[in-house]
View 1 (cartoon, one colour):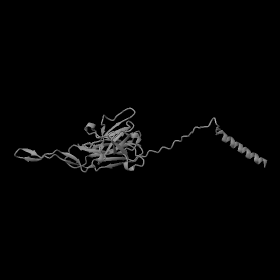
View 2 (cartoon, one colour):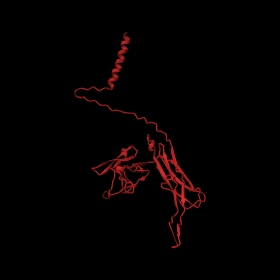
View 3 (cartoon, helix red, strand yellow):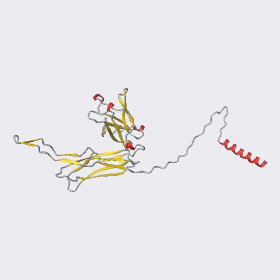
View 4 (cartoon, one colour):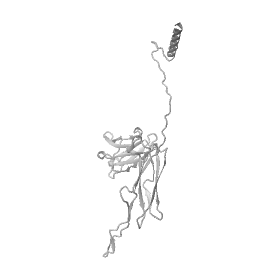
Length: 284
């Protein structure tokens, strides 16, 4: 019985010593205590890069209407109602190719046209190369994309194959280009009379700018949606406006700090600041 009691007392003493080693004794002359909080960092596993890119082809069909000599007038020895030869896509989207990036990394895309053997018709794209940003998590509906428009030139004397379009993709792990999308508000429109909208960008730290004021013209898409490919490593602030000076009816947004938007740039006008005379924006 005495041995058991001795063991119990020994354990109690050990516990008391352990507690005392991490304790502070306070009295009336020292009534505060402090201790550093520490942490151990364990790196998480990095997700593997997964590439998934959709290519949506227009039917790439064109109509060539040859030059019309018009109507001969024997009284004046002249032709009237003459017209030049013209190329036109068969439908509004016939000459468009859209590449959509569902990858968790940016990709580079390049478009090339190769004439068919014996053909003299040439083909060019309005934007033959582009970097498409990585997809944003949980935002499938707004997957980043790029659309290239094909234009053909030359003459033909019969129907047939003009050439071949090739789309080439490659990885762009270091790409910092992201798409800024602006949906114009019909009630508080920023577009000028020509339907143009401009984007002015700068970096707050070193005052780098994408162009002198009012910046560069945004690309107009369907309806009232405008886009702009912006290097977010080079620029971190933007202003969107109609490209006019204030004395000529200029309209513009307030300064937009991209670093506060979380990397998802789907902007639209949400109000008007009467103090500054500028439009406020929301990101969705």
